[in-house]
Image (tube, rainbow, N blue to C red; front, side):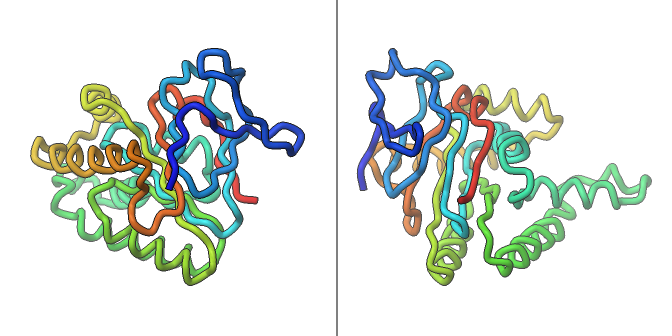
Length: 226
């Protein structure tokens, strides 16, 4: 597996064009994602506006809580997204007003069951999907990798590399934080994913990985399946 940090391919009139040095690159409109690790960090807003995958492929978006995973998914691929946050919000809306003070931990198992049940139903449809992944549940990636192989397609990872302070601020902005213990677990899991990707090693079962910082994620307008 190879690591591409300074020579990602852009698509211009259907012809792959190798970019110049990072500091001189023009903004990239679209970037196909083959079986490599691509590092789109530190591009000062010159990253791609679109990532494209083959129809039927599966994509997981991982990163720290508060790093912007749900924001990215809702903006870039609203019609192909499976986000656990959506399941949580549906449950919160259904709770009687007198029970909305309940800690999330009390009904988290029900939310997760609803989320994974919905994911299973969407996978049965056979189309490309983007799935929110907290990074600590390796079994979810294994499940998705098996499903991708079953349908003859590939699993890909989009990994948001955001520093812990920024992620904590993102949690405060959305009004939902995680415990110190849980955040430490997330930091460990996501840190390992980032370090492996920097060595050119996507997680087991993933055909490719893309590293994004906050600027690259904010500039990504669309995730497409073609």
